[in-house]
Amino acid sequence: MRSPGPVLWVFLLALAVRLAVAGSEGISRPPVKDETNYVAIARSLLRGEGFGFEVTREAGGRPVTRRFTSLRPPLYPALLAAAAGGNVIAGRILSALLGAAAAALLVLFCRRLLPRGPSLLAGGLLAVWPAAVWISGRLLTEPLYLVLVLGFAAALLSRRVLLAGVLLGGAVLTRPGGLLLLLPGLAHLALAGPRSRGAFLRLLLPALLVPLPWVARNAMVHGRPLLTTNLGVTFFGGNCDAARADPVPGRWHRPEESLVEDPPDLGYFGWSALTEAESDRRFLSLGLRWIREHPGDWIRLLGSKAVRFFDPDPHSAKGDRRLKRRLGWATLAPLLILALLGAGALRRRWRDLALPVGLVAVPFFLSLVFYGDARSRIPALPGLLFFGSAGWGWVGGRLRGAFRGAGRGRTSA
Image 1 (tube, rainbow, N blue to C red):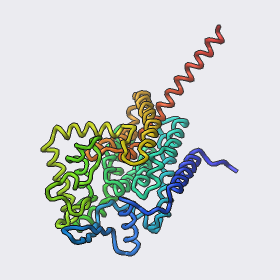
Image 2 (spheres, helix red, strand yellow):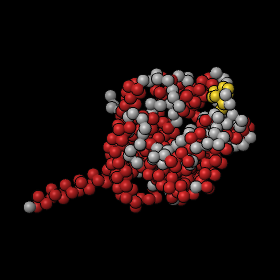
Image 3 (spheres, rainbow, N blue to C red):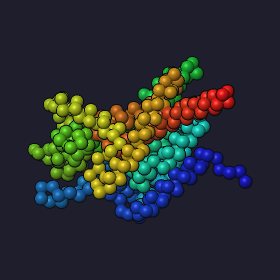
């Protein structure tokens, strides 16, 4: 019987680790925070009530219930409904499978640009990386997003441009910031030489057309085209007085922490007197106004967000902060050093690096625009592991050369 290939072994390792951690945390534990929205949307779809979820808050001394129809991107909750039936346990198993698939896809992506050893190392590291394992135990968008983004990058390197565009469109419907990956995708095609002619439209059109029905639906519901109505609150939470005053500036803060006058009576979800889209627009305008009124603070905030994106210490306020700090310094710090070495070793192949650079640069840019923390770095992990594995290969090659040189010197003597 033929033994499983190395890519399958990476997948199985990643899946085993994720299921083990999910089980230790309690695979049936109730969803919390953002997870509750995705589960509620999935169950609403299964009941035939359409895309959305309800929120009840005390506003003006009385309970107010509002239904939000576009606050979350649609693809992950739709998959949660179709593949997991809205069930929490099945959803966590689905997240583990997606996280394991991302590790396997990273091997396939790296193989197009790196030798076999560093490619397997990159996938193996993603299989056991603490942050990647942690997020795969949650009912959140990142595992699906990583699968779609790595599928897009691997397909583009394999010259399956149309497939790459479709997968990128799916990534946009999972996390709208993925739309920016069009730039490194188009740059890759431009640098690929004469054979890339005519490929721009094959990438661009499906990447834009796949999200188009969702954007058109939102235009009908809200009166203007949009991908999500949480852009404003996400932006304001990272560009406000509370984000500036934080002991570690640049973290996201709830809007009511900064809005003393007319705070949102629905908190994160906005104002009960406004529609969903109107609250989104107001949050966005408040964030932009804060930047205009505090340009110096905003520039300092950008610097802090940049540091937080690469800081091995997540500065968590939770009880496990010491463990997180130790894991960060034990994993991310050496990875960043190796990634710099890898980037230097690959500098002469700069024409091949548009996609790996984009995998790091796009999450970094989004972190500067919105907020910086350990979770915002997760989409950049595949790119960092690509360069880190290349750096490890370069170091290994140097060491092997030194040992061979020493061996020849002893033989001559």
